[in-house]
Image (cartoon, rainbow, N blue to C red):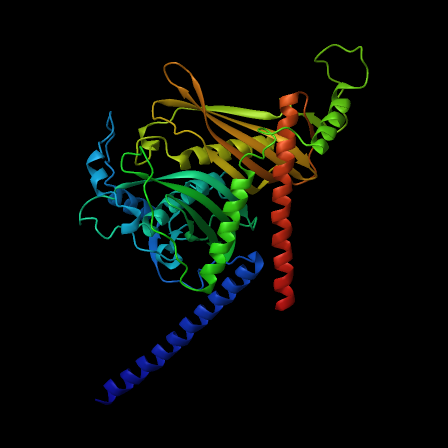
Length: 461
């Protein structure tokens, strides 16, 4: 009996120590998260307010998506018919309102304990392959859509009568250059805005309780056969923080709509743009009237022509690169586009540049499984240590070789030293140059905002 009492007291003390240690870890995590929120100045970072739901590893997330969609493990031509699911598509008035905490979840890439997973994410320098992370971000955005869309009247055992498609990657901000391939990475995110059939998804990458990257995806909800739109649940904020997050997302949506037709590729250049174009013309073509048409001047010191500052590659995707609706998975395209962009930036800078930001990844057309893929990455603007790249993805019909533009990416890299000045030598290249300059200005504004919030955070500490 005495031994039992002693054992009970020992267990109580141990439990108390564990409780204190658990409390310490929670407080430490909250401190880190608070610092992250202050650093970003971001109301959509709600992890500290709605923790708890965990979706497992990213491999488990893929399995859950496949189960909900009843994805066939074998490849079929024609693809497996989902037309019988159309009768289960709900009307929007039948869908209950959802809050951000309903879709909020986390998933993990267990690099620390699973070397078999880590080897797929590390390059020859021991750095993380950011293209692989883009692939996971796209998958995770799809999973968050699944968590947001709730159909109460869907019979048990019936697959989800929806198809979720990436419309746009608004931005991916790399907040820290020190992403490690030897520590676990946590993905967390939620729906931050919802329309009739579209959703904005905000995702964070965290490592050792610090925000390392932030991504904003625009997703579109389609019906079971991917032939028309499908309604999604309305989004209703659950508290003041979610209201602030929604307000931020609505501002982004307004900016997206305003910028839709403002690109210099779609609109006549402004007077200031035309002045810059003329100055570039004089630098590359000269002021003489007697030189041959198409002739360019000798390059200024430490500069390069855009026409010689690109890299291109061809890919042959296979059925195992397909998505649930039998076209090539967008994450696969993003991974390869990011990796050819890294190669291009490395060659241009003669070093190992760091990816800083990805902006405005547009998805124009789906890529059929029986296509070849051509990816071309162009350096379109430089400033100091920074390079702005435009990467274009084209799908080629394997039989006719007809080209169809699938995607456009804008990526900002930082070199180890100041890079060569880039100069255009044609009207089209000059338009690309102006467009790249505007993308660089957006990146610099994002960077200034980060530094501003970081400074404010330090002053409060």
